[in-house]
Length: 219
Ligand code: ATP
Image (cartoon, rainbow, N blue to C red; front, side, top):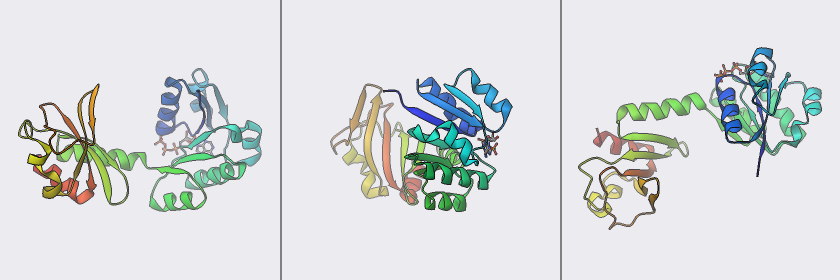
């Protein structure tokens, strides 16, 4: 079923979110107060509108409340982002995802009822930094302040060993939750007897410091 989204703020982040949603076949209402930005999306979005989203009357007229999910990708103007989120909340929008500039901005957004808060620059910086620490770290996803999930390319030393042999839980405190062998073959929740093959990718979960110790040993 097609979902309906509104993207507010068509900068680099909002613009990319908008393109991805459109490419995935979703209906998207794209809004920005900047005419040039809106023109960029006029041909591809379901509807593209020039509007200041801190104006409640305008938001009502646009019918934003009828959309299932609204993404607020206003960056620098923190006040504008907060006011827009409050208006969306008051209009009764169920799911509101907002891009935060910093931790304080995130706290305020959660207090006023944002459903999800994202920090694209910070999250991408984390992923890149972990990939820089070890080329084997393919991806890194923060679950909470303390825990993360990492996608790790297995090393040549690991190949031929069972999870019992590797014993990463006892050695590092991380748990292998899945082994990706190829696109069709993913072993979810592998057993101690499962053997790592060359080219496998491991999905591990654990405390950040445990993952850090594991990735340092992979260098
Ligand atoms: P990015 O890094 O994603 O490019 P940014 O963090 O630099 O974004 P801005 O460029 O400040 O963020 O804002 C993103 C977009 O949001 C801009 O195109 C801007 O015109 C738009 N915008 C800012 N405030 C409002 C508002 N009140 N109503 C509608 N659009 C807004």
